[in-house]
Length: 480
Image (spheres, one colour):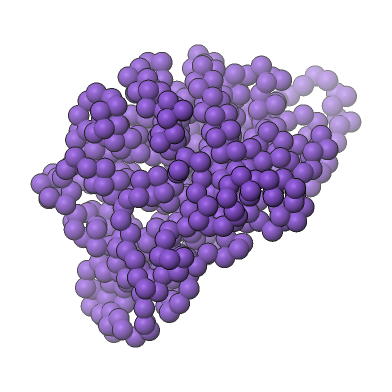
């Protein structure tokens, strides 16, 4: 058995995805019990969910928090991703992890088709769309059609354009919706995300389709607004999330193997600070999520709490200029039991609010907006104050900027979604300082890994030429 199959067997067995039954065939006693002769779709499902979700949660902290001015390294007199100092290798782990699990998703789909199990096939299509959307939005053009086909001797896969990737994954999500069958159970063990609730899997698939259609909505050839309206106006045919309890949020219990991505929770808070931008907006809103997201700042001697206070993004000068100990991340966020956000319900309501505000769907944009805010607050276990929207800073004002500011907070700790949405909308308006690099511009992609440049040089060069260069400012197809 290959090393990867051994690894998967151990992880899947621990996740409870391998079911064992008795048999009268005593010849089975001669079979090596340490080998898996045939895997099922369920064998692969839980490792994919856990490994992808936990990796994305760690990347939200390591990259998105900095580039989107949520949290900062502190002290940090120079450099850092919050100053848009992006290393050549910044996207390496993203590329490697996503392709690793794309291979497993492909195998899951193959086994589901062989087993004639439409539900698992639909789940595989949904997971594939999720991972490929993250991959292409992180890099631009990426291998897809020829990817993960080393067993077919395709060792130098051609790149697909971002338009081709999106066309494929959106079609797959549309097809997945027709495959889900709530009358048939998931028979290969309990899944760790929705606990075999096919209805919620279907809602996740359609909600993901809404997210991705909105992402490409500037491209008129995708007819995205009409398709989103069709989904929202026909919930019986295209069910989507309607409450937090249905959302794609993985509960990480702390019981092996569902452990926190942080081996030591203290690493989440060591030499860290909340950004002034992130904190001040929440202060303006008098937002109850502050206590969930961070601890209060203290006087320089550490004896007196002084409320929620962050450090300016990309600040200039030495750290001695600050006469207080800034607010820091709440360590409870990464201490199991904890959650890993894949896609929340609040995001769906903010999509509706944006579409209604622009006249693409009927309904009250203000009501959708307020539902989104309430869901985002409650997702983290806080309670929305009854007078929250009487605050002019919180009230719906009919602008995209107001919707996206609240969406920014709703997408907190949700992989790279804040970054992607900023690139789509230009909101929220992030602070700029003279110490920021890259002409004070937020980068829009990772550079391709060195190994891709070295070992797939011909296809790499073609992709780079088509995209206008392999640099952090080369905009993707849906951004233009």
